[in-house]
Image (spheres, rainbow, N blue to C red):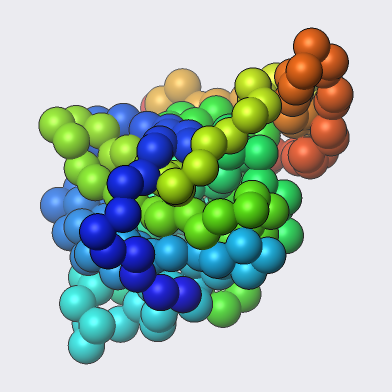
Length: 229
């Protein structure tokens, strides 16, 4: 990875997600991560690793404990909330038509990007990696603008293809109802719950009047329990 300075860059792709409902700790972690991400340059044919770029999430590196869902429980971990950055960057990479090398779905569907378009991140166990298949270096930029997190991919060239993402819902599972007294610790759940589902995500690419379709993933999300009074 290296930095390009003093060059005119065009926007290749961008994607943004809402920050509504994020905790102060999660917002702090996002700002800390953006400082490490912005300005990163991925050379042609190089594979970018978000975990490698962000480094270990510890208090010594500026990260704070914030809510994270792990194995169905809400726990506070250093760097909590960075899955939103991973998911936002994943969608920007998809729209730039970059090959995805590694990506993992969450246990539950996440509202910020929707099913089939999320990318979980966990230290060195779950990573987001993609390859720059363009004939020029890509510069990664991220920022918080108002109530939104935005990631932009820029380069001295341009993307020729039109890219869109389509998510096909294959099945839905109703959320189970669990008495509040039966919940342990900070188990994930809400009064309404959320359905589980199976989805299939496709990338549609139109180039020179022709359209191709690439299967990105088939993901299964667990239902989030509804909490009964």
